[in-house]
Length: 434
Image (spheres, rainbow, N blue to C red):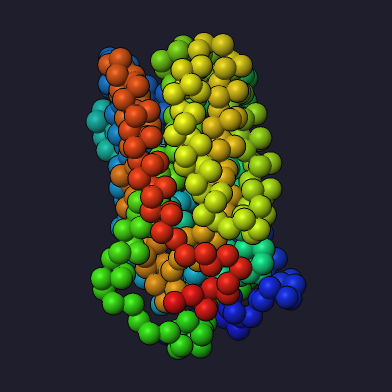
């Protein structure tokens, strides 16, 4: 195997401080991840405007559902990207993938920014949007696959949970900035201006800022190398074990991603479309809730270094299962209701995302990590994350919204059962996992 770096996860032990190159690589990875998630999330928070611009708007509900269907299609491209880039990350290293996916995401965002309206080119506008989202989905699958493994591998074992929180701090910050961008635009632009061109601005900005992220990532260290202990010491897993552990990852990710997208994106869309909350107020309340979430992430990540990932993950999944009905039913047209419910929901989400890269990396040996992440994690995100907003909007549009909450509870409980089978590898060097 042709890995590219002098250092690996085995070189950073629980008893030594990480070298400066690892700190710089953590920052570069996180800032690039932030921009990727900004590009990815801005689609959802701008979906109401995209529906009017790039779809037939004679039926507003139909055009919104069409926009969310394209959102879901982007998710279904993620497994392909995860599989391809997961293999590349295993062969050429994580750094090569993190650079490539940044380029693809920037290209797709700039394409969305310049697509002519439905009124100008008809259904070709919807088709171009679909193509751009498929490219974004493939890039996003590769980025997620590599970044989860990368941050966990360069982290000191004793602080792996804390370092892993950086991934979702950047994810949350990207989502927050996207939401804030839309909130600011809706405050300063008229509804007509937003519909005509305002929604395109964040896509263009995200695409151009990717150049800065590429510059930061150019000198990142590689997290694995050719004489990695995991490549030499441990016997290969049989196919049955690969499938069994992969299915555990799939089930875990089903619960993780469904609960995440329910509270990060679906709540604000529901408040605007179903409860008729003012869009500016909804985006503002969502921004505040996401700031609270970001503050909670490193605290919970560090907590997991002491309690283990299993406990914090179960708090998240079971806590959301218990609270989803009362919190969702509290949302009304009053802005404060979205602030309260989304804040509580997101803090519960933080108990799983605060240490997620560490949690899943500790269950898979180095030789299989990105390959299993690339397929099983991406597939679960496609099926359960990509459809969350669509299912939520559709069920509430036909007055069956409570079924979505039941669905979430069932998935979260099944995911909890998978988590109960985890080994406790908290603090164990990742090269020693077999």
